[in-house]
Figure 1 (cartoon, rainbow over the protein chains, first blue to last red):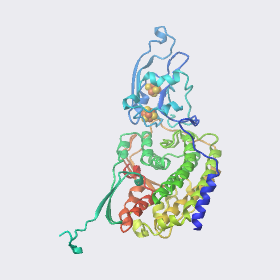
Figure 2 (tube, chains in turn blue, brown):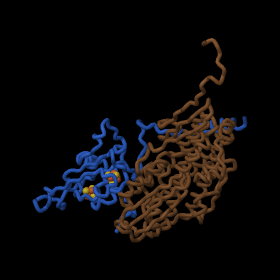
Figure 3 (spheres, chains in turn blue, red):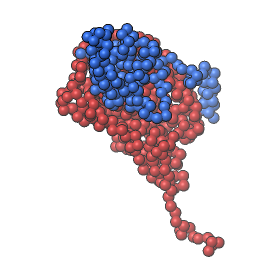
Figure 4 (cartoon, rainbow over the protein chains, first blue to last red):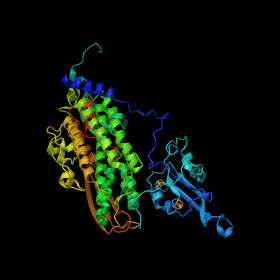
Length: 163
Length: 376
Ligand code: SF4
Ligand code: SF4
């Protein structure tokens, strides 16, 4: 009986503590800056085009091969009268969020800081009825950054692949 | 005819086949056992595994060393840091990489925190297995949440960290790391005390667990058990003590062992281990100095010389080993994960035969099984 009483006492003592429950759909806990949801592309606001040059580095490094990258000549390049220094630019870009395992490798290999992990709640609340709706195209991938939802690339200190 | 009673021996007596799983809350994942029961007594248990097989080992052979890290998390989803640790240590050993001191201490802290969170998970789930102890489950969630929030602040993810890299860490910990770890330790200590108060002396809990699922030390060793499940039988085997890796040789801690080899002793070992983990982390925090977290020169693409290594570490469930063969180049030629859970599962039949059906569930719970590690 003594043990049982001790158990009951523990429960009672816990009952007096502050509740820790987070009322999820109505309350969103603030996410840490490093939070990794899914990768998305960043928008160069100065020139008004994506940072991504379509160099395929991330596509080749992705362990689950969920990215598809197509590159084109930049119609906005200086040589053709535009104001961009990027000779090549991204044409089409798909990331299959259903396959991505959020390993951060694409962010680490990108030389242009063009891709970042979404650290907002939009990156977590992605439920859809059909898997194919999780294949994100260039518009969907850049929209958050274009609209100012993500302002900058979160630099990581001491990356693994510094030469 | 019908009114005449037949003598006993003319009844056909059949044992009942009872299927548990694969989708059953008490099997801790997708695991199926087919029990032969005679009334309430278990006469035979046939386990079926493989429902969670994803071929992580084979996949890693097609990937370079960095790409493999993410898959290691998924082989052991309750203790990702520990699984990654074995893998990156194997790569480091093969490539001859020197890991900076700071990275090693941080690794140790994270692995011990992961042990805490994994054992909290055990305490919670075990309470449910034992009976109507639903309360510890919620308590466990509370403490585990605090640890996982910390992991999220450090690595960015709550379960699939992908934070360790061959050579060190992906990035440094946040500046308030030490203070945050201390906060988490305070809540963990409260949690451990709560569990102690709730379960250890509880008469009902003791009646359900003492003398159940006995396995002798000799048998446990023969089956290749490891971790708290082996220590519960009184074998003081702990890779951290026997073959110190990281800086475990500079840290003072004890290896708790049980006496009776029953379910209760395995529980007590884990509870005591959590206290030890807290003290290990506190000692590690004192050693933590600023410094680099990656070696000075790291190649862009890590290549290893030909060779083979076996590295083992003490994960929450026992010895987590990685056997890595390289024929040169940037990917493993062969990768084999020695999972503690698979070996711990072997004596399931021996431990449950002769027990009641309800006790067989407790026996399964007491070896703290994670099916992703069994099937990989
Ligand atoms: S995101 Fe970066 S690595 Fe990937 S294609 Fe664009 S520029 Fe290249
Ligand atoms: S996070 Fe990993 S899995 Fe996802 S797209 Fe990037 S490299 Fe591929």
